[in-house]
Length: 505
Image (cartoon, rainbow, N blue to C red; front, top):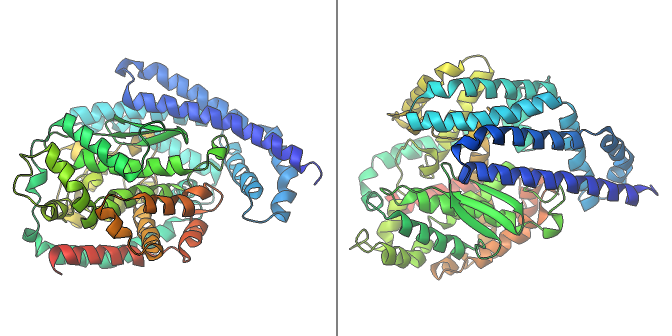
């Protein structure tokens, strides 16, 4: 144990180098999705492969393994929740996983992801799934082989899910989905009988893109995402968030000139991710702990700010005057309650990122069930579009007219295939449990929203979620923040209460 301080220092130094390389890789990815000229894709693919190889070499270095081994007594003797224990635990986890993946396979995965993005963009632009199919088959093959070498005794989707959501299995997800279905499916049926009570035509007009941009920037600032010195917003085909440090966080959005919601709510969603990244302890910028606890926890923050806050009646009481000032013709004669109802209208829709809160999780279930069918050998990748359309008809009673509204709408399968959507449903469930607890701690929380005061909620999230980084597992972090195990009940209470108000149920 005498060597532990020196060994810990060496471990942290190695982590810092890998973290720097990973951040550089993120910068390259961000540029690829925002400003890179289209002909830069081929060279960028090789640059990313080189970076991935360097990170993989450092992570699989036998000297790192020996260092971890010498530090195992620290993990056994220190407090389970100590920073030192968490550092060793997380590095050991990543090292063990990486050492099972051959370097060539890692490079192959990076190249497949880069090629997949370009193939997806082209296929989406030309509305032709078959242009994407070869890249999808390649990404599926790489994802399957990677899962097999990591843990040949587990289902590939369990292996992939564990990477994104440590401690969760597909069985856990199916249990959550079963709980949600039991309430949401009959609720959707009840709402469909009263669908005419809520109109959203106000959202489907021509909205000047430049004004949409400026309005979204105002909203993002209001929620507490620092755009002045620590963050920025840009445009991309598919909105995303990335961070190069707690003081350099980038979000993106997309704009449709014939609809209000896509830009505005994408910005709120990504700002939620952004506040998490800006709220992580700065001392961990070059440490493995300086990341979100999991993908689902990250999504809890984006879904919270996008939906629980951004679609609340109190938010629109505060923010609607700003919308009217930007778009007086489009909002003429409408009150803030009209706008609030419009942005919360429950209606089966094709686009996941634009789906209402009640039907959203069905979009996730469809994708998860398709992934399961492929990995279980029950569905061929070439048959995905037909299977997609059938499930949309079964679950939502609608079918897409074009691939960009269906199988090609999401970017996720261009960079890997499997368990990439589950985190969104988990995020919904976690967000409601966190907010319910925050509201108990701050009884006038919603009233503060009416005056544009969102700082109390952001501070609560910083103190109860962000500050822990990756020191706790997602399950432990939920228990730490709320005093309870993860449950669907707060989310379902929230959904039933909101829809009852909207539709007089």
